[in-house]
Image 1 (tube, rainbow, N blue to C red):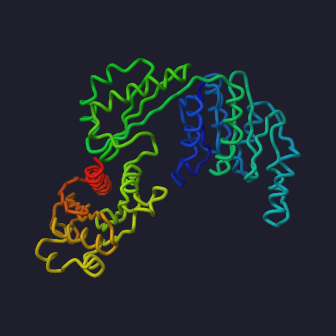
Image 2 (image 1 turned 90 degrees about the vertical axis):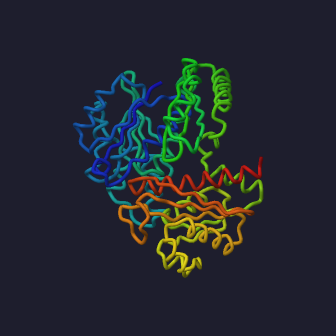
Image 3 (image 1 turned 180 degrees about the vertical axis):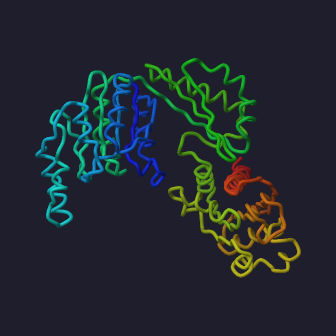
Amino acid sequence: MKATIITIGDEILIGQIIDTNSGFIAKSLDRIGVEVTEMISISDDKKHILDTFSQLQNKVDIVIVTGGLGPTKDDVTKKTFCEYFDDELVVNPEVLAHVTQLIEGFYKRPISQLNKDQALVPSTCTVLHNQVGTAPGMWMKKENTVFVSLPGVPYEMKYLVEEEIIPKIVREYKRPYIIHKTILTYGQGESLVAERIEEWENNLPDFIKLAYLPNPGRVRLRLTARGTDKEELEKAIEDNVQSLDAIIHDIIVGYEENETIETVIGKLLSKESKTISTAESCTGGRIASLLSSVQGSSKYFKGSVVSYATEAKVNVLGVSQDLIDEYSVVSAEVAKAMALSVKEMLKTDYAIATTGNAGPSKGESDAEIGAVFIALATPDDIIVEEFNFGQPREKVIDRATIKSLEILQKEILKIVQ
């Protein structure tokens, strides 16, 4: 079963907002075995919408459209649906009752004609009830393709996808199984990982595909199996993951989308009843943000000092001005002092510190642009490593953040193993 996702809205095309709806819909469809073959963003223009519908007709099984269902004149999706399906708009009593209750009962104001017009739907459509908003979803079929229209407001769209569309597809369509397994690796680039696993990749069965998903400092390896026998697919995926683990066990840190390195670190710290703090300069709080993004992180993450300016390092962390004058603010000595200071200040078992020149200019230090020092204070030692992550600035910050977590993870694993 194949699907196309369309987002309607000039605000997306001019970059005013970012389309997050398509990603959510795609993941939801993928979980039930529907393959998304295309995502399209188009303007609020009737002719453009009609042309796009015609191009997709009978080429995919389902087209899911978000946006253009508001009550104002620039929202044209409902009228365009009527033209494409040679239909007319009629008032749906259930939708009108819901909109009235929402406007008058919840918002405590008189319902306007624009609000009432939200209850207008094509006469032959299947109405998808929007419990959390005023714009209903619409389900219409023409020949071999179903067209579904959803509001563009993310929480309304998500409600209709989860409560209406996915259950309806599951009930009415026979679908193949799509099984994914994502392996998270840290510390080696895409090309090096590919070289190490080339023979393994060449021996994958035809129904399993491998995708490389690189980010600064990490590579995700996603295995995807498609077929009609779910148990056979799951076993094949698991067998191949085990054989992969035997090849690159040293860089695998977790599995699946939720097993990010910060999640893995959180589990390790929780298991060992250890705590962590950070003192960040060039990373500007990124490490703290990742650590604290994990549910339950308050158990092990105690806090951070973002000492971006030199005076913050001196006045907040207590780093010696003489030390800075002698070695430079971007140095192994200052990184070490930052880590030891925040470790003592917040009484943690581990502490990470970063200081560097992310660019584009050198700032308060003569160190090369891209130079970063990462210090890790452990229960028994202090480790300092120097890197040059090049340019641009965002690359330096991302790589310094991930490398800091990688160093932390390796040190924690020493006591676990």
